[in-house]
Length: 165
Image 1 (cartoon, helix red, strand yellow):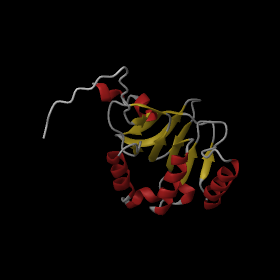
Image 2 (cartoon, helix red, strand yellow; image 1 turned 30 degrees about the vertical axis):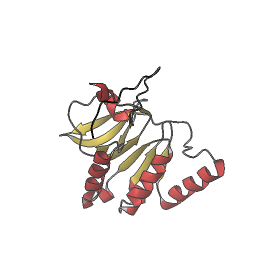
Image 3 (tube, helix red, strand yellow; image 1 turned 180 degrees about the vertical axis):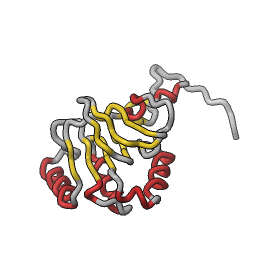
Image 4 (cartoon, one colour; image 1 turned 135 degrees about the vertical axis):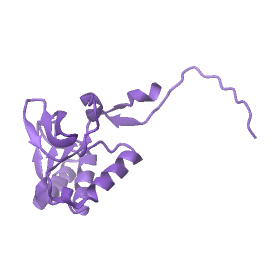
């Protein structure tokens, strides 16, 4: 049955799920169609629904980040039918090294590039351009913009600030 359990502790550690802070830092006033940060089941399902809509398969699609999730998302996009020549990896770092092991990283990058996926480095996404709530481009810190109708972010992780509201 139910009862009261009293615990004593010296330190209380709250370990919330971490979210991708890229979209959070954009402080968008309205939702943008085509922008995804799949850190939970709801976001994953939204991305699945988006990809099931055929016109997105031949549209410019960007995947942002520098971790192994980027490679997994690229493979997912290819499996869903997105054309490889429509996919661009936007890496914020000087080199794209999503895997610590140099040889494994080299093989993974070779596989995606041989499929036709493009990789751009030193591309820190800071915001998006939208028209009528639809994604038009990823805006970069250096002032460049990369046209896309789909952007999947796997940026730096942080604590969801809404967790403690």
